[in-house]
Image (cartoon, rainbow, N blue to C red):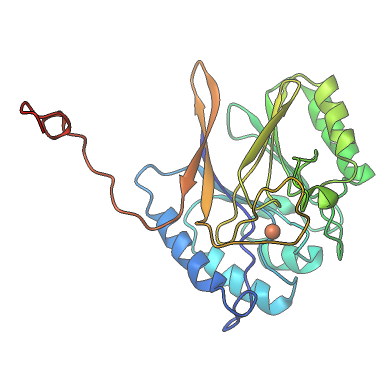
Length: 274
Ligand SMILES: [Fe+2]
C-alpha cells in the first residue's frame, strides 16, 4: 500500500486569488499534474479537508474541475473551510463512499492490508472541530467488528499540538477519539490536516500526524497567537506500508527544485587532494 495525502488546498473561485495575492488555483492545478506524473505511483490520493477557502459553490466548481483530473482513486473528507452540502455535491461522484448525507460522512476503505477510516470532524460555520455522536458510534462499530489494523483520517487534530494559534481550533472532543485508541490497540494512526504543517506526536500505540498544506503554511509557534501564514513551500505526505515493518510516512516537497542527480563516488571523493 502506497498512499499520497494532500491537505488544505483552499481553492478560490475562478480568477480569484487567496487573500488577494496567492494563486492557489494555479498552484494546485500544477500540483495535480505533478502528482499524476509521479514515477512511483501511489495506489490512491487522500485529501484531508479544506478543499476550498470560503465554502462557496463557485469555489467547488473550480476545485472539482481541477481535482477530477487526478488519475488515481480519490478519498476525501471536508475541513472547517468547507461547506458540507456543497462539498458532497461537488465530490460524491469522484469519491462515491462519501454517501449522500452531508451530516454523516464516514466511510471505510478495505482494499488494503490495513483499514482506512475517513471521518468528518467539521462543524459548518465554525473553525474548531467536533466528532458527532454518530461519527463516534460508527468508529466504535468499525473497530469492534474485527481487529484489522486501522488508520483514521480526519481534518482536525484530536489533540492540541502545542501551537498557540491552532490549538484553540483543534477538535474540541478529540478526547473521545483518544478513548477509542485506549480501547482498540489496532488503531495505530490518526492522520489529519488543518494546521498547515507536518507535526507528529504519539498517544499510546497511535501516531498522530498532520499533513502540510499544498500552498500556504502556518508557522509552528508556541506563544504567538496571531493568525500568521507563509509561503513556505507546500508538501504532501506519502504513506508506504513496508512489509515486516509497518507504515512509514515521509514528507514529499511540492516545491520546484533541481535534481535528483545520480550519486557518483568518483566525483564525491576523487583521488586527488581537492
Ligand atoms: Fe486549512
